[in-house]
Image (tube, rainbow, N blue to C red; front, side, top):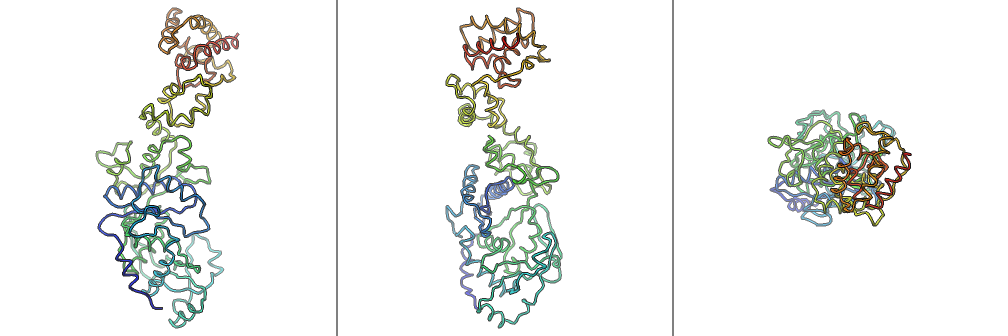
Length: 497
């Protein structure tokens, strides 16, 4: 088979050189899980830290797994997270196209070139029963006579259209060594590697082959992926060596775990990026937390937990990536998110909180800006807000057991007395503000010789019907207004009698 060598020279000439080039290469199979987001983030950070180029490539060779709309999810997520790409399907670039299915002819040409260079062979065998039934965790060496076929016979079969695949030709003896930025140098016996399929009989490449071809032709200098691909790295190395190409820097990241034993999985209910945003986590908090899932800053930054995206880009280095799996701690993310929420301006918080507040508060008499100001310091995630403030719209049915509060030294009897004493004072109060309410009620407590809580706890229960509220009694009364507050206090007195 005669190859057009000029084609390969022209492809080499297009490859950019001289700076760091990284790529995020997701498959459009649905949601963006946390591990994928971390890969995108680390890849972007490596490029930005070095003043390099960040590329988006869509890997859609596995047509059976494609999900409609998934490409839009990828674009939207990267945009929301501020992970801007310099080259990609939507912005173009010097090594387009950036969608694998549009590069189909390229893979066939390079498969043929690899056969000519001795790194692969045409295999005309049908899949054996042994291969079909094999345990995927076990290495099953493909053994056949196809590599020994005379060149004339190979060309005759190809010309006749006999179905075939292209398989990698793994050396029968010796070892292959590769180096990873996190795991160091790893050597494997070639006898443990299989002659993997590179090009399927339908002309589409396998994931492992397409990755190597695209990474080389796009000038990728650093390849970031999950540690589950460590076992494939020796075969990638052999491909690079067979072509005579420079091997990029491998950065294999350990998995993100749900707990010590289990990886995160959508099937088990673990959240995707979109799920977290829907629940009311801020994108900045998610990115900050995900960055620390498997990476730690060094030196004077070693104790720092909060980073903006530009700060991460400046601080990020490969030496900080850990070999140990990272456990996704939702409680830690909630805490971090709460800290980010506290830093928002009142206007920013209101814009984010308004849709959640409106789920629970329909009354036009309630000032949602005032509600937002009250809940912001105590808010961990935005989706908690409807349950926290729903009492403002309608007083729920509640058990008078709520009036029993050990810390406030309150029971039903003392609570009834407190509400009956507070009612006429509040009825006479003209300035219905938090400060005036607090002054009037603390004066009542002082007059009766009791702690403030003895008056304020029963009032809080009467106003909310809840044990947990986003503010104290006087703050709630100020939000509800005088008429509604007095009505609820009277209701509380009725229940306690």
